[in-house]
Image (cartoon, rainbow, N blue to C red; front, side, top):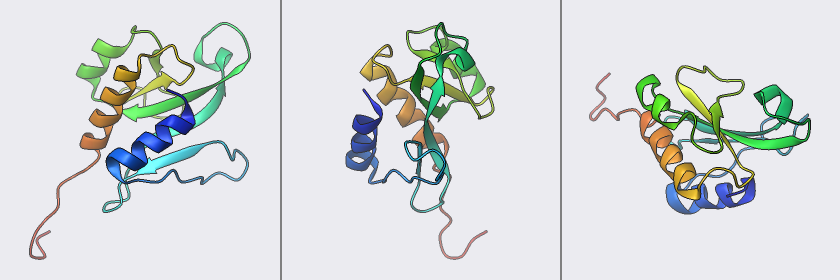
Length: 126
């Protein structure tokens, strides 16, 4: 799955649009919940060397929220690395270069979406 396919998947599955917030990096975008405005994914282009990978060529990276216990079961899978620019205890990075299985990308996006959904209070409760 590449960054364009991911944006399309998020729109079709979660009803969210890619938001391009960073004028200096127009290819980067975030995905966030419509109701609570929390980010559940960040996509950016990072030099491979900054991720501890061989080479300097940039790669698109998806950062997703994932709890510390669960992230241990994903780190080491093909295409899954520590997050970039986010808290490495609670976020994971997924390479969008075809090295991560599409199923892994979708699973981690779903986990992140649920973890950041929060709960809605009814009747003005706080």
